[in-house]
Image: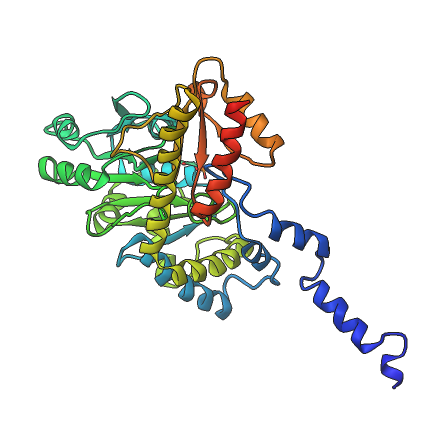
Length: 396
Ligand SMILES: *Cc1c(COP(=O)(O)O)cnc(C)c1O
């Protein structure tokens, strides 16, 4: 057969199998498949090779039928994760973009920012930078806000909105957002509740509609286990009414624009189309797992981390602890305080030498703590290997 001369059929078949993805060297595919389970930053998190591969699909036009079909697949699955009937907006930006958008669309004049860590403080800094009067209700890093105290701070003060971070990634503390929102609605019905759920969404239970949250935002690169570059937001009807009333919302982050284009199953500007392909692949995986199973898996990872800290403290005789108090710990990230004499960056370097990536403490906690991001697609078994390596490092 002249067609196969020089290219034996069996051989070309083998070559095809060895190189399933165009433009990608086979050893790279193999490497990324076997190394999963080594990267435990609290964002960006490890992304499954098949999700990364989805980004190599050929591009499509963002005003065509294929995009509408893609958005129709994404929409209901995102709403399922946010537990909302409202459309979930997709923003081509990092999550900080939607934090700024929340301020610019929801705050006429005054906002109360509940601060207990670096990201909560970032919300206040953004509000100040947008020219708003931003008052902080501050508790120590690692602590959380409690509904009574928030109600006391909000009542009769005429705040347009309150910002709160659900899972504070810098400390591993989880704010009781459902109770806080309820307390705010009771004492100040016109005050909007703006929630940063960047490191909680898809890892910790969050009920946008049932908890009466006015705006919830999240990023792609935390518990959703996607590459960075996309952010997601969902707004109540009250937010849209408010936004219509607030001047200076700008263009790129105008909520009325987001709502309008979501109705047409479109985005306002050219979206990061390749990232939408990754999102499509990952939402299919998340749906197959089930959101409640995903929450349970994260809770199990946080619990096994806490159990290890308690037992390692006893077995090694080291003064190890978890920064956030029991009952107020995030299921997605744990901040472990180190004994005197051990430094965060040093522990991380030694973990790196074992092939594991974890994080130091954040900002002012950098030297005195480490953080493990047990979020995204990791399992208790993979986490066990990290904790085992960490024990070896601490013993040394
Ligand atoms: C990571 C993170 C952010 C910032 O997200 P970017 O995508 O880097 O802008 C904000 N809030 C929390 C709680 C985070 O964990």
